[in-house]
Length: 108
Image (cartoon, helix red, strand yellow):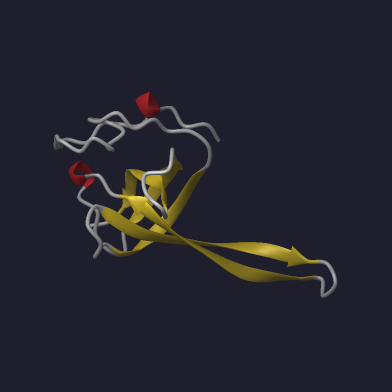
């Protein structure tokens, strides 16, 4: 699914973050996922996790798998723990951050 930043509504708050896709110069590309925020303790970073099911042909059953990533959290979105968010891939922002939170699906 290709996400165009123009399709996502702009947040009401304005930030001066250079890595914000709305108010900065960050470009979005690649994969898009929806997950739950586990932690926001790092500066401008959130840990996001989602689960999926993988079919195992040998046992004819499904197994649950979890994916956990670090995503850039722009100041204008006001992200908290246990929020459901949408993340999009971008260029590498640091050693472990390759995603940006673009939308809060549900939350406080």
